[in-house]
Length: 469
Figure 1 (cartoon, rainbow, N blue to C red):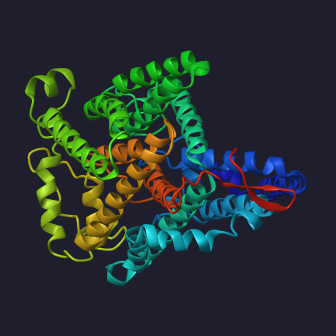
Figure 2: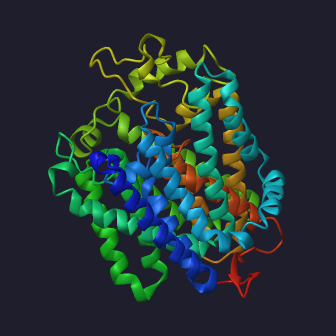
Figure 3: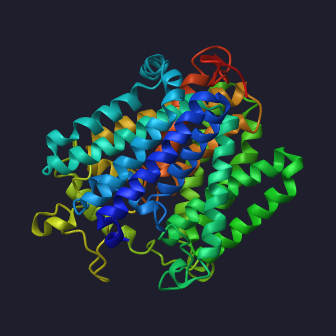
């Protein structure tokens, strides 16, 4: 592939062909406004598949399209050109629609500033973290990529209602499941122990991504009878994939998230204050049960879930990471400033090694701990302020809107919380961070007024109007 792209004639032909198709799409979107929404959704699907989980899809061409590659110290000029051309083409194609849909971005920013100032502060810390990083150039590039991803998520969150976001989640999860299911029957779709990794590249991330789809399709089976049989089929297929992925934590989370969904029916009937307290308590109990099951119960952990008693050594190196974090407790090491193996002796994480196995972790295996390494305890506290604010907004929305849309924010927040206990992906160019931003934005808009805001924008006759689709 690299040799082909190095040929100037072939490269020019590919660029010309891509430009031609881009102009054709641009023309259709400009002339036929009804196509604009579908094309935009298609690009959202592609983007979410590209950044799926914490690793992203590993089959070509998705690694070349992953925005995280732009901050890679070993990135090649060819990859930079491909990415800039690809995303530039998307902006150009969608520009007839974006001229109208971006008009309310200032208003959305004002709502976020009032409804979720902690999120705005977190984004500001990300942008400023180069000033306290030991590698400011690396941090600056990575911060720009994080902020660009956040901007896309803000746009999606403000533009689409929960019913539409529900559909987007179903489509993306179904594509990932079916492709991964087939791919896992090949040697490339398994790890060295035979566990399925699909097109995600790691068994835990594969299981967590599949878990997301399983819960979404289970909810769809409950509320949409016409597609119930197909939804149950997808749910069962997802459970099979999770079992083949051999992730004990994912199996526990299936039970926790299903229990949460049925519990939300009770919480919906409570006053907002009591509903908030009850949901937080449910999350705390779920976290405790998950830790107990995956770490301490020998029979369940070893014989049933195929896990060791220290979550594959995580509890061995977490104290080491906390010790390093305590050396720079306030603002941390800056975005992408802690895990830097290419710096050898200057790598801040060089001493993070599990002595008994000599395992060198590539990250903290805990999203909250990784966030603290990047932004310090200040950043962690600010983000947690945003997280609890989002829970409060989600509880308010739960009491106002009909199910299943009303329960989706709390379901996704719990999913994000639980999956980051033993894996990373909370902050970064990941689907977890993307969905968190979407939740924060959507719930801010939904609770900004006394009535639920469910009128996203779309283009019709060169005007931006609001209508429930």
